[in-house]
Every structure is written in structure tokens, then in C-alpha cells.
Length: 486
Image (cartoon, rainbow, N blue to C red; front, side, top):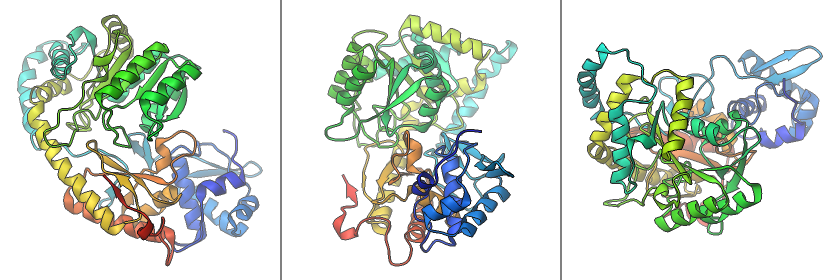
């Protein structure tokens, strides 16, 4: 069991449990579920005494006792006489993309927690072609920890076509981009080493750093005076960080895109501090601008082969169920990481690798379909949110899969807790940060078809009214807030 949490601190995290969204005990229980699910209350945390929490929240001891009882009945808490009540993750709780949700998504529930579109229409044909191509491989033993030569060549060719000459010997094939991040962090950072991360950032990257025993150092890098090319090198100098994990292409969750000049300054300044740039290109192929030619990969601006390590994968451009990723590094470093991967698994799935070859060989066709659909869905989401929730602010991104919304009030946890009652699953803003930041933010993906998106926004609006209570809004007066920032 981990240490407990104080009543005042838990009350601040739960927010106002009064209002128009149901009995206070239910609002409290929902908030604790969300806090436990997204990791702000680690499983095993001892909850405050009922009377102390009631005083901090301005409710009766009976209300807190009812909330604790509901948590226990639903599998989110345990209790023992004399030892108190502590939170736990129920056995049925599942999660994707690093975000925990309270149980499986029911039919009719719209999932806005995960920024992952369905497979494009062309993918079944590519799978069929891969099966035909792989018939000859069935005569072999199927083991190959280095990855199929054809796949490594296809990945290298894609880097070369984007302006970064690459050979197959520089490529490590992995079981998805997240595994690639884990291998790189384990190779470059040990227990106690510092790893810089943008703040906010991809939630599972934080988990990977923690699993390696390294220390994540969050760096706010999303403002006019806090650009990645200025603040990350400064933080590297101050902390002697071994690695800096970053996304230059449509950063998750903010959608920010770095141009070539910013990339060059960033990787060169980090290198001067002895910090390796770990660049996640998961969203690099999702540029939604008409006729745009994206910037060069960050590694194209590096002075040395070991200044930048690049990871990527097919989960966003193709399909989340296609668990193929890769690492691009200098030859010697790539060879070491292939050996590290081989110690963890004897082989990667051959059929998935064959599908990946087909995807990469026809990436222009697949990308054109994917980008056209996402552009339409993004624009629809922007219009729907502007109409239904005009006090929410967001910058319309040039690519990626989601909007990063400023709610105008610290209600992200409350929204996430109330959302299931309105047929929604949300990922609260704090899941994208370290500590307890971004309680006023929500990532809203534009990955659903038009009718589903429109219905999702209607449910979001109902959830926001539920949280705000009668006659109130979740943010500032719409007349004082611009809503959309282009």
C-alpha cells in the first residue's frame, strides 16, 4: 500500500461536488474513479478519514461514507477495519493509449478518450496482398528478431524519400511505436537519469520513463516565449538530462508543428549539452494542409549520427491494431538496440510485417485517403464545438488527430467523471502531464465519422451543463472568449 492523501489535497483534485450533476456522494465517487484511473491517485493510496474529507468538501460524513461504499461495491476501493479505505483498479478496468477507462465501452457509448481512427478502406486489400506474399514464408521457422529485410528496406526508403538518407542497417523494427520508445529509453537512460519531456506530452511516454527507473523532467514548451528550441536545451543544461523526448510533428496533444529552422536549432542545441533527442514521429504522416510539403525529419538537421534517435509506427496513419513500429539511429546504436530487442522477444509477427510492407509501398494512396477524411472531420468538429461550446478555446491544428481544448475552468476531472452518464468516455487533461497540471484542458479527437462527431459534441455539451449546474457555464462568458484560434 502506498502513502495516503490528505483531505484538503483530495478535495482540491475532486473539485466542487455540489451543483446540478447528481447527488454529492455520486459526484465524489465518480471523481475518485477518474483520479484513480488516470494515475493521479495511484492504486493503493489510502483515502482520508470520512469526517476530514467531508469537512474539506463541505459535505456530511454520511455523504463521504456513501461515496466510499459505492467505490468498494464497484471494485474501486478496499477497506479493512482499523486500516481505512484505499483505492484500487478493478480487475475489469481496461485501457488504451495509456488512458484508463471505467470498464469496457458499452454499445452506444462514444469513445473520445483515444485518438485512433478506424482502418482506411484500402487496408483490407493490403492485408490480402500480404497473405499472398507471405505464403512462401510458411516453409520457414518464422523466427527473425531483426525484422523482415523487406520491411527494414521499406522503412529506410521512406526516410530517404523524406530527405533523410537511411540504410536498412539503421532501422530496428518493433512491435509498435511505444515499444520503440521503451527500447530507446532503456538504451540511453538508466535508473535515476533525467529525461526531458514536453509538458503536456504523450501519457505513455511518461509511463515508459518511469518503468525504466529514469526521472521525467516536464518542460513547458508550448508558448510564444517557451518554444521547444529554447526551453528544452536550457533545461538540458540545467539538469544534465541524458535524453529529451519530443514530438516535432503535430505534437500530442497540442497539435504543434515545428518548422525546419526550429528543428535545426533544437537538435543542435541539445547535442551541445550532450542530450540525445528522442523524436517521436507517430503523427508525421498526418499533415492535413492542402498540398503541403512537410519539414525535414529532425535527424536531417543533426551534426552527428547519434545526436537524434527517431521512432515511428503505423498505428495512426494505418490502424491501431497494426502493431508495427521502428527506430532509426546510427548504425552501431541501431545494432545494439536490435540485440536488446532480441533478448526480449524471439520474433516479430511475420504477417503484420508483411502488411506493413504493403502499407509503406502504397503509403501515398493510403495517406491521401486518410488525410482527406481527417481534414473533413477536423473541420466538422471545429464547427460543432464553436456552436455548442463557444466558451471553449482551441487552436485549429494543421495535422494530427485531436484538438487540445482550454475549458476556461478546472473541470476536466469532473467532465470525465460525469461523461459516462451521457454516453461518453473522455481522457482528462491531467493524464497528459506530470503532477496535477492541465485540469482545465481536454483532448477531443476528430477521428469519428461526421454523425458520430455531431452526436459526441451534443453529449459533451450536456455533460458540461451537468457539471456546471443550473444557470452556469464551465468557462468564462462566451462574449469574452474567442472560442477558436486559427
